[in-house]
Image 1 (cartoon, chains in turn blue, yellow):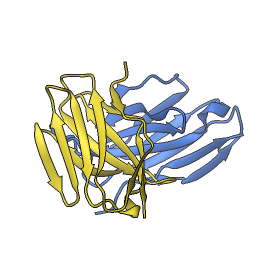
Image 2 (spheres, rainbow over the protein chains, first blue to last red):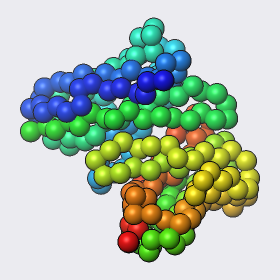
Image 3 (cartoon, helix red, strand yellow):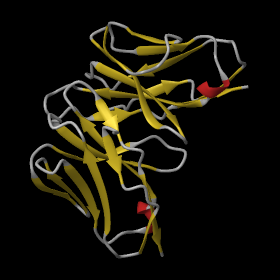
Length: 114
Length: 109
């Protein structure tokens, strides 16, 4: 079974631009969560989508948004990029079977904002 | 108070020794608990999950859960240099995953 895939793997953007990242979950997984990982803050939860609905949201500004499609693929968008948005963005997919709820991560998208 | 706290490390152990990694969590309603391994420059990889009090063994790895003490641990027996990585503790409260900041482990040959 194929794992979680994320595209692109690397991105360099300029301050003020916007960016869209894509995530395809493991086949059959309907939950996709997004995380930002930086050396100083660790893994921080952005949001979770389940069946095309945002189910949970972390403490990030409205510049960070996402959506999920009917095939469970998800996109994350960051508008008006800031230097501090430079990070590894990870998505994780899950079957959402209580209590297991195991999350599997994709390889991540490394975003650099200059 | 953070939702999940880990001993900050870094932790160094000689090859063949037992490495012990610890984690505490704040939400008593937490339902499931996980350990991830993350190599430098890579994404986290799930290595253990545990849902009930007690021990769960998988090869050289043993996860221990004590819900009364809100404590999760990971033991790595016969540590190998390839175990050198950052280990992340994660807790699912039923609504959301929370991750610790990780413990860096170095296994010295």
